[in-house]
Image (cartoon, rainbow, N blue to C red; front, side, top):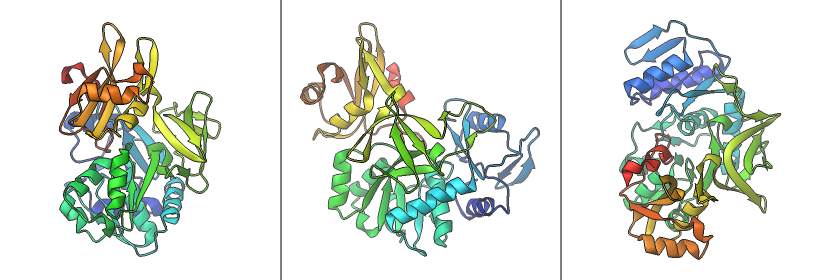
Length: 368
């Protein structure tokens, strides 16, 4: 079902308990991905613009919303979220940004992802109908008249590049991927009020704003360096699976992080550590350093197989910086082994539907 009033009504009824749980799936999903989602997550009914059909073998749920994750490369996991978790997150978000009742939110992220879904729920709690855009078009976003919007860094970059008045929004929630420092500074100079967010489907979306957990959300760094989160915003489990990564009340994320002066800094995913010549390199740390280079507009860092080093550090860059430039820049700020050994210049970083870099595509040696 495309984003729009029908989907919003379905979410409203699910949240109130008057209607069935909602598993939003993008109408743009390729047929194999759609069939994998239906076979794995086993809904009781499928609703399309053409009507409703009952699914044989469907399994009921106690959840209110189920978000399918990682479905583009295989069978997805279904993150089960209760009404309590979703509204706890939305209320804490509205309070933190100072959003007032009656103010409108713009939904220009896919509601099949938690970032877009939470815009709908914040709208419900604000007593307003969201402004819903099925596609991100910078001019339409700038002219939407919304008070608040949730964006990923690539969308903010496009707004700035087209000269849009980003100061028109009372709040721009920026999440989904790490934002280059220069991007936030540029948007701030243009009058934007940027609030960076960290979270995931399992935490009902962003649960750490500008490095500080939302009210009633607890955060710690485990002995393995992973970010751990607790509180009422957590999911109840993965649909039809028993492998949710809980340690008591703590949800153990896949992200490495540090807390300094009471603020969280996310270093990168634990599975994005590059082993090069026996040395371990956190890809996110290298990307953050390279993003500060004046010749870099956007960057992603991945490991690619190499017969000599096992893996090499590869920087995929939007900009005009050379390998020599970036190696020199990195070696002034990082250990020499963390400097990139290859640079690939692209016009845009390939993204997943949720706005995060498509690391699987970036790691492919065929991209060289």
